Amino acid sequence: MSRSIVVLLAVAIGVLVANLYYAQPLVAIIAPALGIAPEVAGLVVTFTQVGYGAGLLLAVPLSDRVENKRLVTSMIAIAVTGLLGLAFVQSATTYFVAAFMTGFGASTVQIIVPYAAHFAPPARRGQVVGQLMSGLMLGIMLSRPIAGFLTDLLTWHAVFIASAAALVVLAVLLSLLMKERHPTAPGVSYAGLLRSMVRLFVATPVLRDRALTQALIFGAFCLFWTAAPLLLASPTFGLSQTGIAVFALVGVAGAISAPVAGIVADRGRANLGTTAALSCGALAFAIAYVAPQAPAFGVVILAAGAILIDAGVSANLVLGQRAIFALAPEERGRLNSLYIATAFVGGASGSAIGAWSYARGGWPLTTAIGLAMPAVALVFHRLRA
Image (cartoon, rainbow, N blue to C red):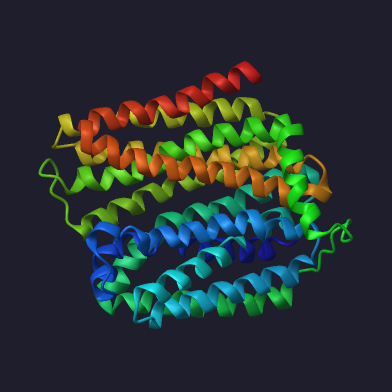
């Protein structure tokens, strides 16, 4: 694969995954506009996440059966349809349906990654995956600031229209520039694909181990980014929503660890890299714990923690995918689906725990739980290494 194609795929991944997070800072605006009660306003975000989870389990495995370029462009079309629905809906029910479609289409990200791994030479596979994961982390971290800025400048509808337009352009480019990839076992039935995933998870220790460690550190990542805005908006720091959006941009610096992790994996030092990544995750919360105790420099301290947790989760993601992509090529789509789905459960749990822990025990309890998650993953990894 040429470098330009890798960059194009990384951009596509970033634009796709951002759709999962655009609504998070806009819940307080979208919910009243659609008559959604405050008690269930969280569903504005939840249905997109549910759609993504459904796509991971029901659509991504098809990459082991269906020609990949056609599958990617078809899935992007679903995402575009969902986004246009989000932009022009006038009721809560239609919004939820559109949000589900958007999330389902966004799971295309996890079709693109094993596709790229297939064409990458084994000696550079980790580097290619690392570059793609940089795009993913940039999409996650930039989505909230972009949503806030576009809404302030225009309206919340413009966020989804702009994303749909970007995906249309990307779909055209991908249809022209992507190579076709025909799976080696296209005769397997769809039901057979889904049934085989249980067998793969049970019979593949590398997949289970890597999925568990990624679930724990991704859970810590989501916990941090759920609770940190609450701390920043509190009287301790008193940041505005714009200030919090700018703070979120700091975490983007952590995405640089993804290509570095890929190089480390390609050189056969994946175990060392994993130890470093999980240690960064634990250290992030140890540093962040002291932020409220030093208000003058607290934001800087918290920013250091944000960079470390982002670096840790990015690096560990790449190292895990590099490990599972070294397994059976004909099963990469399903292996990646299981890996990301497990991590996704960890992330959703981390978000819920982050809100609960901050409400119950403030920042000290939140950082204690956050530190424990990558620490447990580190101990598990060292025992299994």
